Length: 277
View (cartoon, rainbow, N blue to C red):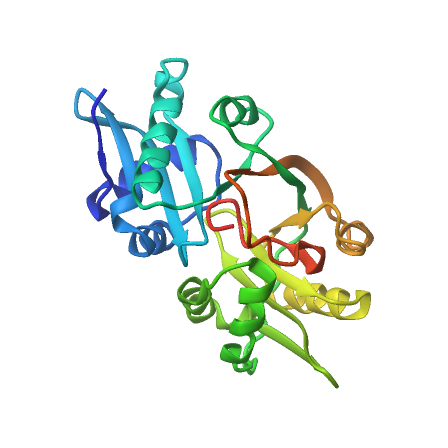
């Protein structure tokens, strides 16, 4: 089957596939992904129709992220997903990327395992459903730039372009907490097509983690809120449960190749999202 590079003209087709999968990404997310690595995003076609997508983002040549693996339900069980993944792997291998990472659903995990991916740690998606409310206005957003170096340490690589774009598109969700020794926590958020999402959500103690979560909930007026919570976080899950979130599904952070820049996942309450890492 033909597989080619994705372009901005394929975004409507990508949106169609993500709607069929009931995912939360927007056109702005697709544009950001394409801008991050235009040569590393691909679509499959059958009779000129886009039937699948895959996207890659390279973070400082330390590791790469694979996301947006989507296949039209009408064309599943034909090896399209595996072919797209292999195309992404070949692309990253050609750039000598030592480690490839992704977040897998339980259904996708066996496919990734066959391609050499192994588990790093578990993530859980939690969702809050509530009546809509009016979003507060006039919030003062902090200087996000001060946290970019810390995020490089936490995440394991520089993703400042991505975070700057997120902060610019949803400045009301930017939070930074300071302590005597420096930044003790930071968080951003996004407006998805179906839900608002919190992430990255990073804190080094329970009080900061809970305050950022409460601030995000107060600032968002959406009926649906999602958080992809790192399961091993010592306080994130209990904070979510206490505020009415319900468990939705597991995710598995996986890697192919040795990850020599694992970051500090013990401080991550919630990830940015499966499409970004």
